[in-house]
Image (cartoon, rainbow, N blue to C red; front, side, top):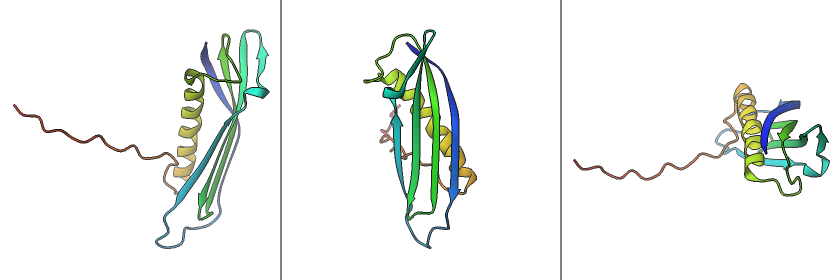
Length: 121
């Protein structure tokens, strides 16, 4: 089983205002992979998904809906990471581009850097 492609069917983003001075923006993200609505067509399973992002305070919203095409047999009730991972990566990448165009930081959590260990010669 492998993800053959990801298609975005609906993208909506809206800047609702400007954050108050000194306000810390918090992004609330919800990713729904709707396996129960999956459709099988000639060896390919189409799995719908929705990504919703909103901020606190409420100054921006983003909604992305689409379909992932998966080749081979897949358990749509319990998606394996090799299916769920690419869906989330593609949707979050698109959301980051949209947020940047609206003048906001990407909705992705910042990965902490591993501590640097000194190297001795």
